[in-house]
Image 1 (cartoon, one colour):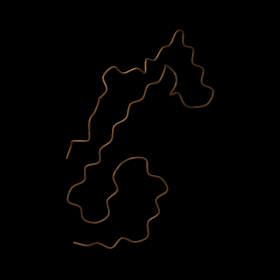
Image 2: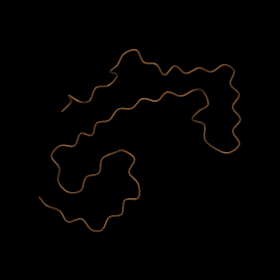
Image 3: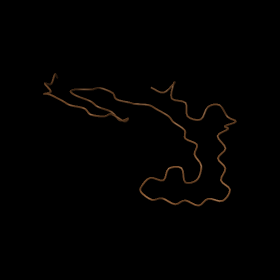
Image 4: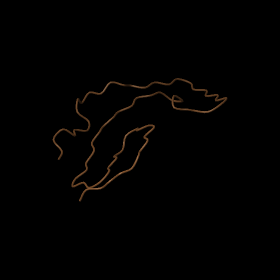
Length: 72
């Protein structure tokens, strides 16, 4: 069943699903991996983070973590 959608303004899309009208099957797929040290994702004003010895190991011995290529 068709639908009429009026004017739309999209400022930013950061992942997710947008659907206008009818749909039979929506299945978005994505994977990501983040390696970061201690205190790296702190946000705000006047942050003081005191870390002794901090180590992040970005090496990953197994090649595949989350496979989405064969999913329907």
